[in-house]
Length: 195
Image (cartoon, rainbow, N blue to C red):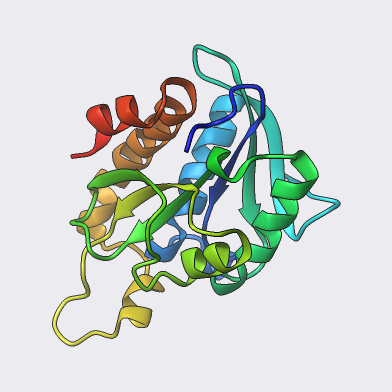
């Protein structure tokens, strides 16, 4: 599946809305989206046509047109707002990027891919149900929960003090990977950032 070079990209940070969730592992997608918004030089506004915050702008050396979004639904209902934005902005599914936390990858490791399963991630499950699986994913590793901690408890906890020491750098690197994907393509971004 090829991307449409004339259409905008829809870059979606996945997370849960509200200050109580802001520093959770599950909200790393929002963290990357916020950093990208800073690079674009704008601020998020409430979308008229979907339950999301959006920012339109351009990224990278090719100055690619992007719509940056953070769904305002909870994680497991992300698909509706993303599908609404896709339809409103006329974005092909192959031009959508979901930035999300990934349990099965070591903390801080990135993996970029197109399509695939949801691996139990409720945000991806909702997006795939709404649009099919053929969108890009920037998977930010958070590792597995320690001991017998439940997955839900782990992803809804803030990053540990040890993890926070590297978090700003890792979020910055994930934002670089998103820009590379949008401006130079998946293969180049995988080569540079899949660690």
